[in-house]
Length: 204
Length: 204
DNA sequence: ACCATCGAGTAGACACTGTCTACGCAGGCT
DNA sequence: AGCCTGCGTAGACAGTGTCTACTCGATGGT
Image (cartoon, rainbow over all chains, first blue to last red; front, side, top):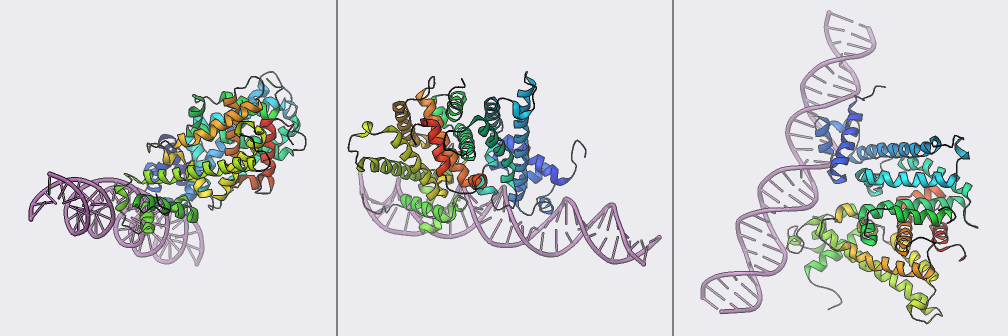
């Protein structure tokens, strides 16, 4: 359990993460990753049966980083004055913080965000990739439940709608549509609008 | 202006559309499209300088179909009783109808929807792909303006947030996350929640 | 101590892909 | 007629993912 993992499997994943950040998803060829890891093109086969399995491992790394970023954002709320335990904190503020962290992650690591939600690439790779995003979703469900969804709407549906909104904002910004629509790449106003819509306008 | 376009350029696009619907984005190889169109693999080069330009043309076809589906959904509202001109119809009902049509399109043509929003594939192909989605967006802005966004939110931002919500719902369903989160592939409840959030809860 | 075994990485082959170039060949122009 | 230009063919080339044979060093059993 060292700082740097020396196994080739881990080295391939980190090489892929670097390459992904530098050049984007299209550059994630099996052979190039192997080259970066300093091994021949056949070596990854010992650890990943196929190319998409390696990509899935890289994406899983991204999900871990996203979860960590969200946890950090949530914890930061606690440090600023409110010292109560988790469920006591203002659920609206927590949702807003998580939403911002989600969008910040997508903006800071566009390549990784791309890969993570490329289901055409990742599906069928036998991974529990979706499970990785389930904890985040359940957090949203709980917080939405505390805020209180509109009458007649299940908290799970309200949470899914909110998550979809965040995800859509991230995608549209990455695609450049937001700049086209509003003249700016800043998602701030749209995020405010989305939060106001889903949480009610009494906040802000 | 015949029913079937005989030029090779159009034949390549329709062959690509068919292949996309049958097998998905990954099957859209330049050579396979050429094979389906009954020409050699070098022939497309006369009409499309590169592979992604052909893909962009296919995606543009999809944007046209999406625009047509949305127009049809909007017109259907007019036929059911309300015979007034466009701006007089209930903006909430029009937004709901457009939203449903958007999600229906994404569900009915998942491969095409995938391709249309694969900015990593299409960007840099010099096309005005984004322009294609601009009319839809402006319709949303106008309708949202009629409904009246929450205090302090520009109509353009509220419209972008709503569009992002629709898009996110479509993506999450395509990815299977909705089934995971709510146990069903039916976006109905989440769409209801999103519409209630963005349009106010007094409708339904 | 020796030998066998096995995991891990190498090297090459194979079928594909996208791009590029040379070629053929019909039709229309002067 | 001669020529040229547009359009499709055929082949080459580098690069890709996968598969198979091979090496080679460490490990373990007797």
